[in-house]
Amino acid sequence: MRGVVLPGGSRVELREFPDPVAGPGQAVIRIKASSICGSDVRAIYREHLGKGPEGYIDGTIGGHEPCGQVETVGPGVTSVRPGDRVAVYHIAGCGLCRDCRGGFMISCSSPQRAAYGWQRDGGHADLMLAEERTLLPLPEPLTYEDGALVACGFGTAWQGILRADVSGRDRVLVTGLGPVGLATLMLSVASGAEVIGVDIRPERRAFAQELGAMATLDPGDALEGIAALTRGTGVEVAIDCSAAASARQLCLAAVGQWGRVVFVGEGGEVTFAPSPSLIHHQLTLHGSWVTGVGQMQDLLALLARKELHPDRIVTDRFSLDQTGEAYRLFDAGETVGKVVVIP
Ligand SMILES: [Zn+2]
Ligand SMILES: [Zn+2]
Image (cartoon, rainbow, N blue to C red; front, side, top):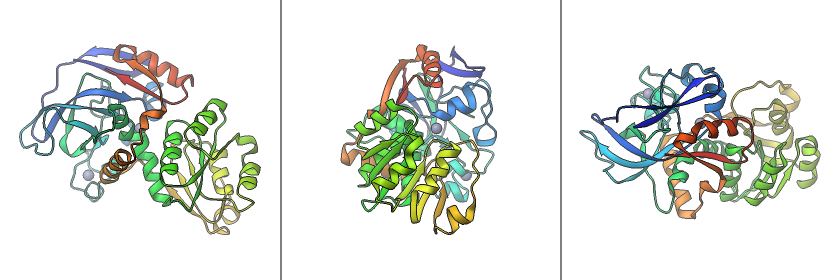
């Protein structure tokens, strides 16, 4: 089979690999869609900067947002059969530690923990070997691209929304309208909230309007704009998906008394004075990292029931042998929404 590795130095290599064979508790998935996440570019593609859970093992097939159809199953597998459409939770934890038992295999502390596309082969390939415990049925009418986007990006957005307990009572500020920000917008709107989106790029703001944002603002006049839109009360919830210091500060400044703020965007740094910006406003600040398997299953069910398709934010599609071009355009900021590789 073919698989794509990311050697660093903004290089992408298509190589031949032996077809994987499913051992006990494993399944081989025929990949139908494999989307690119910002963290693939930030921590692997440019240079191998990631450490610990973001460490990339040289020669590993990239792609941690896979989705496809079960090809074969190994001994003892009971929940999926060949031909089943499956979404993949993108980290295989030990399954036994406290975090794994709670479904948060992302936070597994065992040395066995391995993320697809980082420490074990991922979805930029024809086939992928997966652990049964990371597989979830992909319900109709969701597409393979929908499933791929849920594996990391939409799952991460969903968990941020759960952390802030977003509902129809809330006005939600989303800073950074890249793929995770657009996902946060779509899922906040689906939760009944009114959403204000902030991004530097006008084409992203326009896309956010199409996806149901109540208003979108340039960061330069965002704070005044939010004050005007909320008649001075501020929003109830702010979720940063940009990792920019100024956007994180905007989130803290834009919520009203007792507001809830979630930091989802990865990397960077921020400084703020806790007393005036956090304590005296009685704010709650959450850090939220990916999601749990159960929460991902709930999200798939919700998307299917509402016939809401994450693939609406896909703007660029490439074949497996064009993966290099896909990464180059995504890294160059020449894409607006999500970039998907289709083997
Ligand atoms: Zn990711
Ligand atoms: Zn574990």
